[in-house]
Length: 111
Length: 110
Image 1 (tube, rainbow over the protein chains, first blue to last red):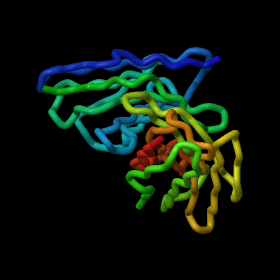
Image 2: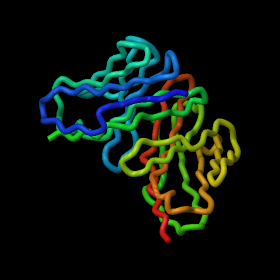
Image 3: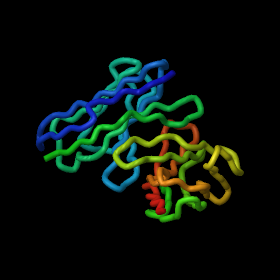
Image 4: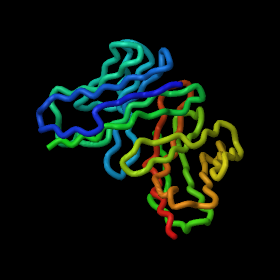
């Protein structure tokens, strides 16, 4: 069966520091992968999606970037974090019936 | 533009039935999803509708009317563990993007 791993679960980072969140998927090949951000009490905002290695589509201009160095690996990065980057970050892959399966999420607090 | 609307909060009593509505305006339509999200956790998939009508899965049912841009999630025999946020999401035609609503926080009281 397919599983999705995302880490770390929580992260506290100072303003201006870099960020790297990693997501890996097991049990499937060539998955469509997504990064979402959820602000407190808000819905999920689509940040990036990828349909294959090296293919990244950005939905919202921002301080973040994404990369897909391997088929089942999706990385979210920032060179310099802002306070507004705080939130709950979720990696997801889309299943056969188009439903999304989410990783455990990373709660990022920028201080 | 793309917009998904659902009520912010609802309260219901244990054992009762509750209906959570969702209206959407999106650029194309390729399916509507409902997810459940407990506080501090990731969303989990509940249901998927692509054709008009009702889809039933145990205590949960989801309805879709594409002509009205409308869906609802029906929860029967409410349990305390059903207290969570319920997210309505729509997938656009021909693309890879799923747009999520802000979610409805459901409080189930004894």
